[in-house]
Length: 101
Image (tube, rainbow, N blue to C red; front, side, top):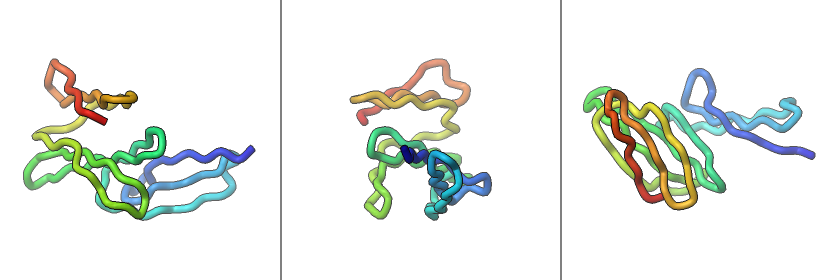
């Protein structure tokens, strides 16, 4: 069986695809995002702009267009994906936020 998973490279800017046995490695460049998550068949990219101190969350497919889901001032400190909602926290806020997935 050959399963794959995705994670960010330690230098950021790349999505690393490893085979289940971790012998096959493929780097997929994506320099815009600080963190990349995968849920079902979608990728979610987190981008932080140090000039505006804003974090943006995008939804995309590799090689496709990105869709901006939300943008806010501050840092994202947690994210959970559900069938219909994405739940996340913003650093130093006590309340979680939700957006449509």
